[in-house]
Image (cartoon, rainbow, N blue to C red; front, top):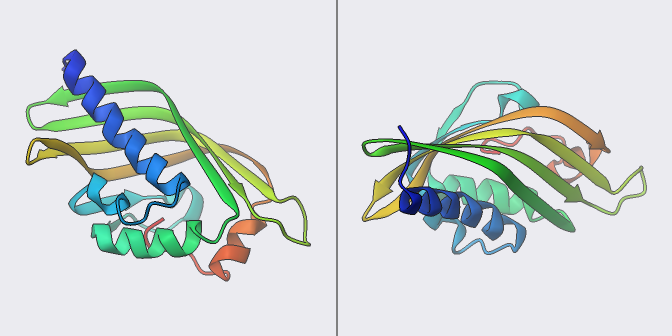
Length: 157
């Protein structure tokens, strides 16, 4: 179903805040964008299965992983929003740039593709309860992910 203009704006705002808080490293505000449990599916990059995690687990994992980069920039665009009762889905294209100075190659790894973000209202605000990232292309030095993660596959990223 089509979303009203206000629903659309609120849903896009919720997703924008998620990536904004990551890029400015506001780890205190970051968990507030999520519902009580979240299904994360990053299998297109990491393999494995989707994970069911809490906002606290996401914060701990992402603060450690993403916080280790010198900088990141996550951009969403071409937002498509659907609402069906108390469920919403935002589908968008993304580019995520990761920067880490290192002696082993380029300091940049850029990943592009799509996100499908599920949301539902909690106390009048749209909260993220699922994220499926589908990588479609990459450029640069993916090895910087190994440098910041110590070679470990992130559990919630």
